[in-house]
Image (cartoon, rainbow, N blue to C red; front, side, top):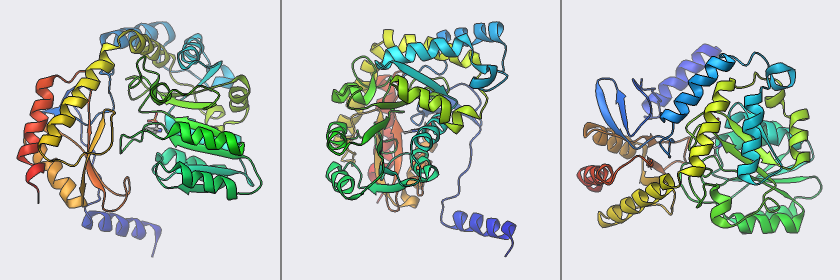
Amino acid sequence: MSLLQRCQQILQTRQAEQLYRHRQVVQGPQGVELVIGARRLLNFSSNDYLGLANHPELKKAFAAAVDKWGVGSGAAHLVNGHSQAHHALEEELAEFTGRPRALLFSTGYMANLGVVAALLGRGDHVFEDRLNHASLIDAGILSRARLHRYQHGDSSALAVSLAQCGKGEKLVVTDGVFSMDGDLAPLAALAGHCRERDATLMVDDAHGLGVIGASGRGSLEVLGLDSEAVPLLVGTLGKGFGSFGAFVAGSEVWIETLIQQARSYVYTTALPPALAEASRASLKLVQQESWRRENLRQRVEQFRAGARQLGLKLMDSSTPIQPLLLGSTERALRASQALREQGLLITAIRPPTVAEGTARLRITFSAEHQTGHVQRLLDALEQTVARLA
Ligand SMILES: *Cc1c(COP(=O)(O)O)cnc(C)c1O
């Protein structure tokens, strides 16, 4: 069989198993309403949790920065692509996260690959929650360290694994908020085991920073952990911050090591400076407008109370990620389609993104959702999901 034939076969199997992915063409900006094709859909599928992706302040900062900086950054950070805009954003992110330094990466995926592979090598050990984001799993593989995966949220399983691993440096890596489940990692327990076993803890808080915690400082703020407990913190700018890019925050030595050794940092073009300026505008709003987090919290509560009344099976999440577990791929797809017919956009999440038999609707909320929107969602769920056998 040729390589091309193998690809054809894989595509056919995917189609037969209802796992084939399609892209839908969006016609306008992100928002609680999304225009797709000829339809206007109420959107419960975006990661733009704070409603900042199309915010006038971000657009203004971005446009003004294009005027000042042009579009392309022209080179990698270590050549001559590191602008004052990037530098200022790094300083502001360091202050926001309460750490000496922060380092910008082009995406969260690249930040994760870069950090883990820069710090570990053959003979070392990386420990990961089974439900960690794909980029963290890939980072572990790329690093050539031995990859140990522990049961989701199970800090005792981690403790056993840490005790048994033998020689070599140890890095424990976890999502702060799990992207498909919405729950928080047991960070205090993980940090305790790391301290005991001389391991370093790295938290990827892509869905937490900006979004949860009284001042938007994410999972660490909610769980009361400082930079000693969590020396390496990864954040992304394309979700709650409504912009694009990512960063790692930590002490001088961590960040300087990454500048020297993180290949996905060194060998790639710096972000457009205008994106850095848009992120700076976003970071201001994240800090000034705590009402966005308060709105979100209220919408999530409204949803959970309503869903409970409908007898829907909720997952243990207090974040704006509120999945409804449906089990089979077919059931999740049918529910998503039925909701779409009622004007709601809610993506069905299927294997391999989630484990076999745990297909779900991944419902997400935005600070821009109104109580009426949530009520429409609940009514639609009553019409569809609550009746799905
Ligand atoms: C989305 C996500 C990433 C990737 O970030 P991008 O900037 O989109 O590449 C990394 N980690 C987690 C937990 C994520 O949810």
